[in-house]
Length: 284
Ligand SMILES: [Fe+2]
Image (cartoon, rainbow, N blue to C red; front, side, top):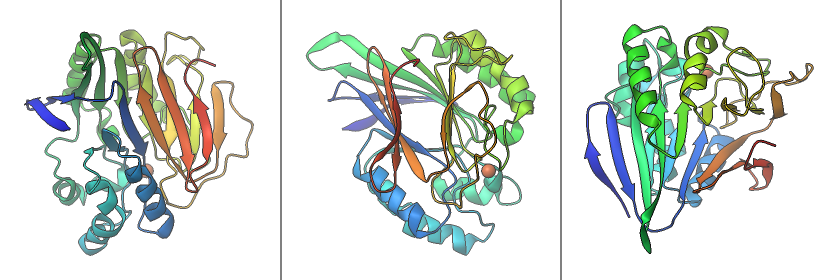
């Protein structure tokens, strides 16, 4: 049973009872096709605590087509009973920004929340994730940067620190590649505050990095970056030489399932037939 515990303008706190783990599906770059429907149905069938969409939902500025996505592709996620969260992609930016915000019921394009669950048998045990969702269309906005610094400082109190947005600081996808502007603006802060995972989309591939710092050095103190842009839209190639910071990458439709436990995060990338594309639970 999920219920809002307290809600503020930028910061939300949800208390999630029962199972002593917190599960989240994450995916982006969906479109309105049959693949997107299959993936959304599969993600919904897992009944996680949270569904998080990392941008580029329906690829249309037409309200009619957007509603078709909402009614046909996204319906199983809405009906799953999970908490539904969104990051804005470039296709949700102007001119259809306000329409898209209204469509999914968003009032802020950047926000943070603490997702917390407790062991019912031992109240002293808890497990929480501080999730920061950003609008990478506005990566240089000073107001958002101030918010990010404050949220990252707060996130240090939680067991796990996770940041999600659309444009990937690290990607070897041949649709877009690494967004160096976002990397130079935000990644040094992720290093400084000890962020565990950075979840993005935009390149229509799956890719995860080794723990990598903003200067490109590999270090377990820095985040693992994931590109999960295989939600349904046509895929991009990954044929060029794999960068040293890239641990695993595939041109494949998929979604992510994250399970936050006390001592580790179990991460699976799951294909549309339900098979596992990639899986890890540590810094391998
Ligand atoms: Fe995009």
